[in-house]
Image (tube, rainbow, N blue to C red; front, top):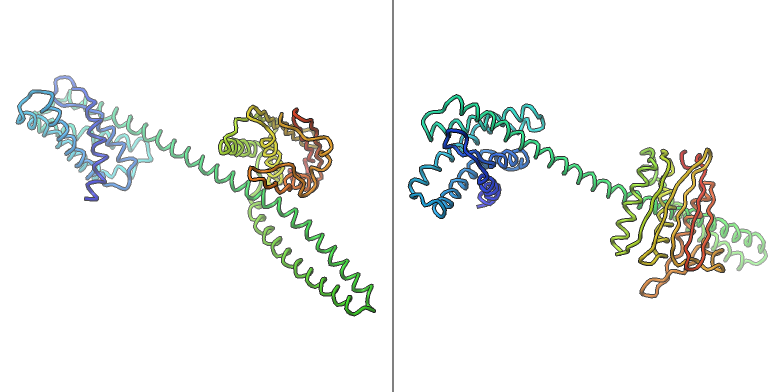
Length: 411
């Protein structure tokens, strides 16, 4: 029963295409497009037997032609069977020959595949005519060779289109996973800036605690308390160091893969931005203008900077928002600009937007944003020895301008 289901759909597919046909000159043989479909199935469906596929196709073609003949031709039932029965011989011969010649072994080679398909088609047609008429002329054999060649080439070109489409889908899926991975890594790298900063704060607290311990040696209780604080902070520092080392080891395996071109980064950011807009049902117009193409060493850092600024710009815009992301360079620096026509930032607030935890963004449930996005951006820009400037006006929009030294990004 499972085998029947497995071969039934391909057989029906062949039979339906078999109703697209014509008759060669001086012949009662019907030449149909069904063999193009059958050749295509042999090329694509590696998990089913080419022989059984041909046999099932022959049976379904035979039954379908009987049904059509009974209902539409007015020819006696016995004549319909007698007329269509030789077509089954074609499919039996086809299945035997295609299995014998092992055509699937050569399916990735254009000329051998075309030759073997054409040979199988021509010989199968010859078998059918011999059974039907008892004789086959040289002229008909020439027609069979031509028809076999045409049907084989048509099937193979459709197969090539199918393979190209399959590769395109795989490339798109790979690109999607690759871009998501890059965004994930850039987010992890951004968090590492805060881990490193926290390590410095922990060192500072531990140093102050130990200084208190040294300062109050005459007070044993206070001395003991300060020493305990120093010990506990030291334990926290070890945990932070363990986590930071794990992240650094994880990132190192990716960064050793080499570089990424600015052009590829542009494509990934553009794709992710469009996906974000689609997921959040935002009709914002995006304009990307990257003039140059460099091989970037610190591409994860640049991912974090641009993604944070673009997402902030999207959140600041209404339905008719416009966001422009541009890049240019000179001999020493690369300049990036993210500009929007959103709600803008109040003049009194502008000096504080890079402070960790500062936010004016609230979600629908009333919960405030973490307020660390722009501080991430500033930390990374400073780590790259660059600078960031912001200008904004209420109801007019905001513009972020980032300057990064080439030697920091290009490595």
